[in-house]
Image 1 (cartoon, rainbow, N blue to C red):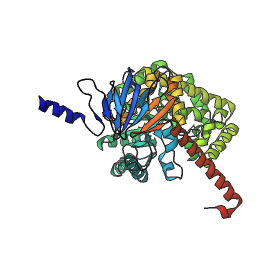
Image 2 (image 1 turned 135 degrees about the horizontal axis):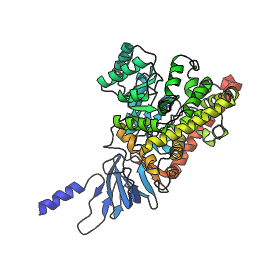
Image 3 (image 1 turned 135 degrees about the vertical axis):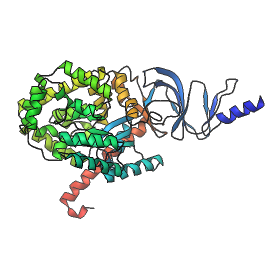
Image 4 (image 1 turned 30 degrees about the vertical axis):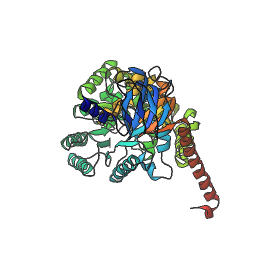
Amino acid sequence: MMKRQLAASTLCVGVLAACAGNDGTALAVSSGTVIRNVTVVDTRDGTLKPGMTLLVDGGKIQRIVSQPVTVAGGAKQVDGSGKYVVPGYLDMHTHALPMALKPQSYWPALIANGVTGVREMGGSAELIKLARAINADSAAGKVDAPEILAVPGDILVGPLPPALAEQRVRQQKAMGADFVKLASGNHDGTLAALAEARREGLTLSGHLPVAVTAIEASDAGWRAMEHLGSGMGIVLDCSDAEQTVRRAILAGEGAPPAPTPMAIVSPMLFRALDARFYQQVIDGYSEEKCAALARRFVKNGTWQAPTLIRLRTAAFSDARQYRDDPNLAYVDKPTRALWEQLARQYHDQVAAPAAATFRRYYGLQQKVVGLMARGGVKLLAGSDLGGIWVVPGVSLHQEFAELSAAGLSPLQILQATTLNGAEFVHREADMGTVEQGKNADLVLLDANPLADAANLSKIAGVMLKGRYLDRDALARMKAAAANAYREQATQDATAAIDPAHRH
């Protein structure tokens, strides 16, 4: 009997805590962080577990208990009374890595808005190496940054002959890409890339070319369609006008190729000549076709990363609500100036009827997202950070609002930014839920996120790799980011007047 008691005691005494005794004495915690009396939100089914205490140490959730806990030594404690704890948010479509090389990265603004993980959608051998280095430094406590969950290699841009498409996929495999991203392509080259990716043990995601139908792509193993396929995207496949419009565009009757990178930042600016096709798709929209497409996506496991906020800012790129947004304080001056320039161009160059069509098309895209969600299609929350008026961190919360307007429930939205992302990158073992053994990347909320998705933005604190950042710390991070951009703008202005001040 004595040996069994000693063995149990040995198991319970670790880095973090000693077990409660048989007499009901409290857990004694001497290291790590204790979050007391908090409601744990189960992202799988929406179950709420009030009155729980999280014991965190070594960057992990060591235990979740409902019994008393005493704190001593170097342990810290957080009062979670009236608060709700959810996993850290995952922004599953960003272009944040290039900014990591700048004096002021996007990391503080992302973390302050609860983002603890990102899927990077810009790729190259250099960015893959940079992502690995940032993750290593972050794990070692040398830098505060969200975990970079996946990075593609060089982006596939077509048209490509099938043999060359296959070669490009093999090159991405060799450089250590986590997946293949296709931005544009022809029919045969795209299908060849999909087949080669499967052979190489990779998945392919990205923009759906007009030359390939959504059903073809899904049947061939397309992993995730970004921005609902980009351009007219999968909404084209939901329209009775699909074949007519597809033939016309492939015959070269649409807008000419747009200049890059401007078309990447503000795509609708360069698609005014295509407005008639967008209107045909709207007029021919078929709920029946769209529901059938959703069923095919579910059958094939084809995901959607709709980035509705990105689609909306593109279609409303000259709107004052974006141009006057105070959150632009978290964007560097050159980027803000570029966005404003493109907004003016949109206002001046895109005729009112075309602009109205694009706004209506966005409404249809939002409707399609709701249909997909109701049909069981797996969705990922993403902002497409890097596009016009997409502000780091802030825009993910705008995405939550757009998804809510599309008809998603608060639980579905929470899942899209937590559980679904973990499943997508095969990280369910350490992410996506608040459970013992999972990573201590958490968001503490002031209100129940299942009552209203807007409560996902009522952040009381963020835990990043086990380190708790309270409301004041998050406010300081935001202020520091805004100040850095403001100071840089001042230095640039001074240097423009007096070259002697240039560094």
